[in-house]
Amino acid sequence: MAFGTLAIAGDATKKSLADVAYERLRDRLLMLEIKPGDLLNDDQLAKDLEIGRTPVREALKRLELDRLVITYPRRGTFATRVEVTDLAFISEIRAQLEPLAAARAARVASPATREHLRNVMRAVEDFDVSAASVVETLRLDASVHQGIYAAAANPHLEDVLIRYDNLATRIWCMVLDRLPDLEHHVREHLDLLRAVIDGNEEEAAELARVHVSGFEQAVRQALFAA
Image 1 (cartoon, rainbow, N blue to C red):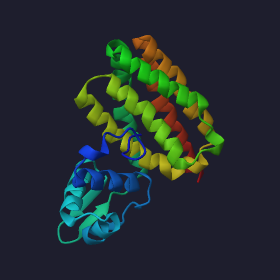
Image 2: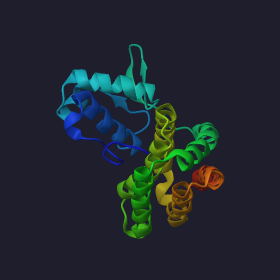
Image 3: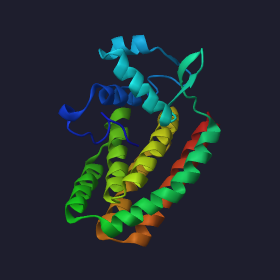
Image 4: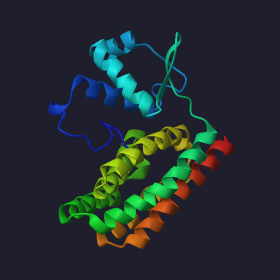
């Protein structure tokens, strides 16, 4: 998963107001603070964010490209709904692209990037799932996935994966409190990170595929058990 305040953010001083509005609204949409189907009023959002209407409108246009909001003529802009069928569609794409990114990262990552991934791995090792908040768990997950996407050094692949990882995050948030083995989901990142750091392309690709498949299965079980 990948969000502004929850993930790896750049230098805040370089961000435009539209960037700030985009990241804040994106986080609220991903965390379901803005619920699927909610009407988004740009005047109210501007007041809530203490940002002008123009940056908010620019942010909403970007969020529509991300499929997080949808605009209907004469009706307004709404948070997109989260449908069970979305899980299969999103997982189908991620099952192809996540292994590609992991294998490429294992092959081309620079020494500095591998060192960064070692730091991420240590953070996963030290993470206390039972004591962590939802936001902290999602932030950790985002740091793993964003780290691997960036390590693949293909900005077009990274952009697509972040978009679909965001969509998967919304679904995950719906069932996070019902997942029976969240600890396992967090810890299996360790083997994936290790494979990338060690340059093992085949293993990294397979572990990424298994991770996506396991995520879909766990979420599906939680959805249908509700």
